[in-house]
Image (tube, rainbow, N blue to C red; front, side, top):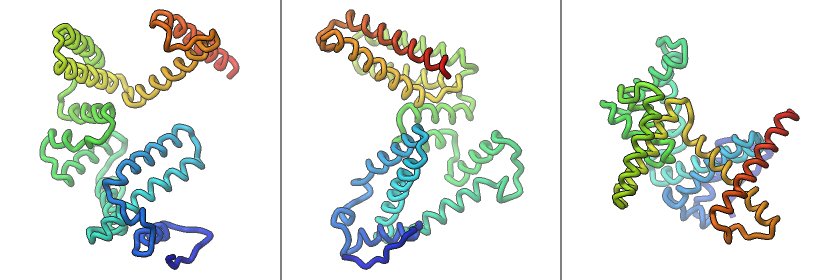
Amino acid sequence: MVEYQQKDKYNISDLVEIVRLLRSKDGCPWDKEQTHESIRSDFIEETCEVIEAIDLKDTDLLQEELGDVLLQVVFHTSIETDAGSFDFDDVCDGICKKLIVRHPHVFGDTIANNTEQVLKNWDAIKMKTKNQETYTDTLNSVAKSLPSLMRAQKVGKRAMRAGMDFRCADDAVACISSEKAELDAAIAAKDQQNIEEEIGDLLFSVVNAARHLGVNAELALKASTEKFIKRFAVTEDLTRSDGIDMSTLPIEELDVYWDKAKTIISESEENCNEQD
């Protein structure tokens, strides 16, 4: 058992100390064994749970989940502190300096009267501080660990700054048809490797169209997935009410139930809108 004075109210210094104690000689066996790699997925999971709390507009849950993310930051930092690389003060020092450098319109003499000027300055400073000498460097710096749709949209946006982009939204949308034709040709040729490549190109073209139309591709797909699940649930309820296991039906008959589900959901949403 480690010695620790419990309190009614804790702060960030207490969190750093608690994690240190957990990973100390007399601390928790599990905490002592962890590495960056072993808890990597935990960081992703906790971040997603913060997003879920934001989507739910649940402030109590948001507070809790932000704490979980903060624990991940402190835990990873503790691993490096034990290795003699850096400590939590170094992490705080680094982000503070970055914020000051990238906001010269606040902490310096640079003028930026609108968001567009702020972002332009931010990008220029970021390229300089990260030693990015070419536009390609800025594309390569987009984290490969991001969700693919999000990464594709960010890469497209950075390519736009170099002038490599569609002239307008209509051209971006037209590219979808072009990529679909190439996919059809690959399918007709039964070229599996080319099919995979062309599906990727088709998805990338859809992301570019979304960007030009002011749509967040990641959120759009999320909404469509939720819509599918909702319709699927109603479809299953309809088949079950008829005493049928939906998996036994041919797709043609399932489509009939699917259309009924769409109608039911649409009418329900219309009624809700009228009540509002």
